[in-house]
Image 1 (cartoon, helix red, strand yellow):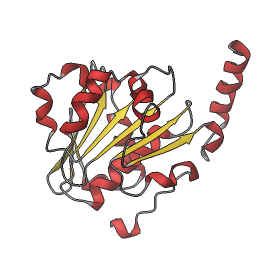
Image 2 (image 1 turned 30 degrees about the horizontal axis):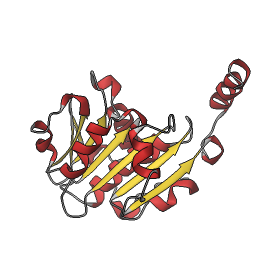
Image 3 (image 1 turned 60 degrees about the vertical axis):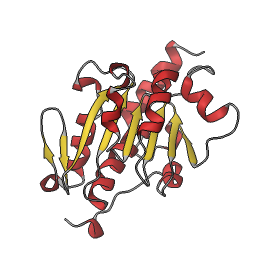
Length: 205
């Protein structure tokens, strides 16, 4: 399947994130489709721009079971492009000798984080847990021309580093922010609805 024939439906709430931007943020509650959107964009970007390398980041990642790797693998299969990627135990090789890797920011020092300079895209999952230190280390490290940093997160506390970065002081230049909730997910299903109703019953606050 060629990229010209690849059809990837996108929820209306995330349409503004499709264009180029230095910072892309998708915030909202669970079940809004944020992670699924970015996982698909990882695959599409690697197909559209051979040689692209992507680092998928969490603040703490003890093993790959706590990463976005399985979700990206699922998207590769769902989109029918499994022949374009080489899925290995700890990484995914992409067209044009690119790679997708998965790391925890807490494991990096000011010196070790320099190993990420060759990556054009960084996707930070569960960005509400990202520390100010990690955010400060990451931003200048992803420095290639046309590089992008993506954040998917569930709003938690006003003093979370990611919340302060986007909403305190001057809005970051080159940033696009999308807000989504369960109502914005066109693939919302009966299982998710049952869980939502149970949450409302158990924890009405």
